[in-house]
Image (cartoon, rainbow, N blue to C red; front, side):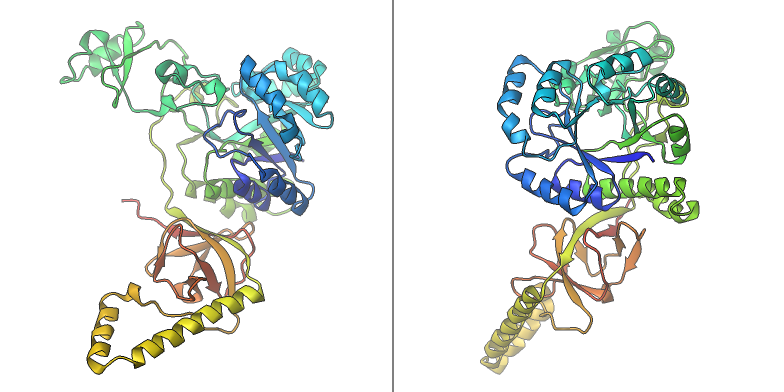
Length: 487
């Protein structure tokens, strides 16, 4: 059985990786990961990570220490080793061989996985890394399925991990110098500015001072001459040389990788672990993509039918993505085609549902509601008729200033909920869970309540104190999404 490995940019995403079907998740630690703009892990978060490992027994945790280390960073790594040891790390993902002896000494029970940054793509390199103590190689993005099978046949006891979904760097294994060249932010040190996805113009240097004319025909005529430059829209005075030759990988944005329909081919090639890219992606993205591949793998292994898995696989198109492709697995030609923009989802993440509230919390919320109702009644009863009329009109004109109070309903329960986007009376809401593809959530089946006052919101968004009151039984980790306006 192939392992499903999902990205966890923070503790919350780690929980959703496990809840939505990942066998393992990979994280980064502050300052030592190629995704420094992800939240990553720090301070006392190891405690929550340990709890999650206990809550989901058998799930594994991989830690990316995959930057290229300068001397100062190596010194800092050594100083922070006692902190790292508090995490229940099963494997380290590294590219810099300089830290290998250190990890082998300090973490004798943790496996060593070679990062895709090392661009390992041939059997002799795999043999060499095995001799150094690596138990797994994350293949370079340029490796084809045929090459992977040859490597597995040559070194059968080496685990092979491959990316199967997500964004692909124009320097496919990630060894990109473009970001550092343009604005001094090195991708190799975790500061990639995604320069390849900016909006560029292709110009001839002799015409750089005149932007009033379209020089596309001239640019095409000299496309192979090396006399082209790129200019980013927001940097009109900066020009970057471009050379395009035969079979040269396109500069600008690559397609997104998607191998969900080709898992049998990956298995037959000897792949041991399927890796999803996206530590900087949203919880919603991580959950939907992880779940889709979990169901596809379950179908491949015969635990569910292909028909049962298909609706979950189709949900990949409800997460933001660029045009999908199969990378270099079958041929390089498709991978060399650049695209622009992204496909917007028709849904927007609205809220994350936690656990059901206990009876004490429920009693407290209803106590707040009852107190508020009594207070309002006393104040209203004390008004003279003219004041009551003015108050009634004000409430009718500004209903948000006098929200109704929640009342007990048979069969309804409160749930902790983290609001992330707006839900109002017109929102079309759906429930997403690890095992339920999507279900319409009627406005008559739930209320969003302020637990501090007992009031029922007319609308609520991020940073509002909120609990969900509903007659629907929901598992912890359920997601609420709303249909978005794509105009």
